[in-house]
Length: 180
Length: 422
Image 1: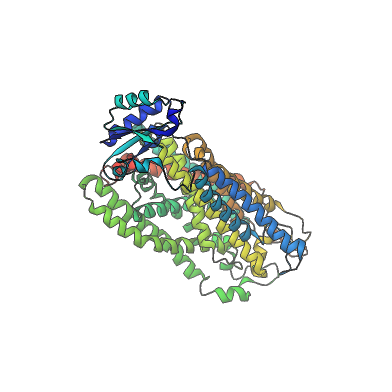
Image 2: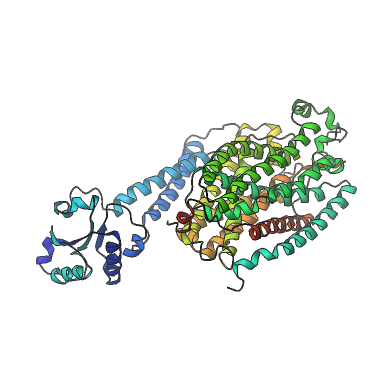
């Protein structure tokens, strides 16, 4: 990456039709791009595959959160009822997996939800208060009647002129450089 | 593909004869056992039948639920459910109905119907104050009327749901979809009450002292789990050389997998809650039911049912639950089929756990009774009964498939269903 590119966020290009942007996305995917995105006014079925996106990693943090919650619930009920202040309730054992089970699964669910909630923040790199695309004059239209592909400068494939030509070859309409 | 999609329905008679042959053997053992005063033979008929009654009630509920929610994915799969549904009243007529209406079988299976039957305490059932207090519900006349009602109710509901759906194939009117929506909305609460009562009568009343207000919900959860497992297994076969070849896609498997995960959790939630409340309240009329499923009443040593209970926790809940958490289990056909098979087998184990253990009079023992064991040669008869009734269900499904469209070609949502997307 040269010095000049560091001040460039990427190259943006608009499309007029959903099918155009869909097929263009397939070609960007096949060219081996990793740091790029497609912006559309509505969800397009099959876009994930057309972009070659992998499954979200968030469920892993959900599972991790759930396991943490289960262990936390076990420790909480064991520490309070059996270790710190052992007390007989209803003739039941000080600790078993049965009586505190509602606590265990509620903790599992709570921590799994935390894992999901904070996991998506981590993987989406949020919170973030500004994005270079917000300064793009055409960007507001991708929530109305325009589709957009943005090739980002952080991708090893990126080179300002070549990337512009590449987008042109995909049938892009308005091609602009987005500055950081 | 070896077989063309059209060739499958031609095999329905083979399944019919295989099923009837298997059931003849099962009924022979039931008669043999009954003449010796053994309830376990007749119980095999009930177990095999209830496995499929639960599956078919699950299919019936799924049919109505997907109608009420206008589920876009459902139409292509729902037609296969509708084809199988007439088996529900047929299985009831060949099992629960004769068992309840023939006094010899009724008195063996439902001990409270025989006032002279002696309890382990030495008293006759008719003098049991607990039964007397329940006799407004547990009396022979009302019991038989309810059994007859289940057959009629489910037959009428199945008829109504199928009639509109098949009529749409020829007259192409969307109005059927609206009418079936209304029938389903009314049918769900009625079927919920009926399946609860059926679970009370056919399973809970086998041990009349015990009661659980969650029993109907447990039976519903089991029914849906079995129905989804049946759907996965059937659609796997039907999409490999059957009428769903080239129609069933990854998104359909994903939605079935998600539902299997949801109802695996729901079943565990209900089964555990029932145990948890009885464990916490610690009332003898309730706890004995779990006690005989855990240990020997005299020595306190764990009995065979302890192992069955653990299988339910680890094999019927934890294994399917952990497997189905993974996305790929829900979309890879072979893996989903494997989990569905585990659930199918587990459903039978759950029925064994619920129906088989009972206190059998044994003079000379300290408690006056022994708990019927899990491992007996009747397990083979149970499995034969499941296979026999299963062959009948498949025969009904294939026969109907040869007489009707195998997907609802003029359902307003047929394209949405065929092109269903995750």
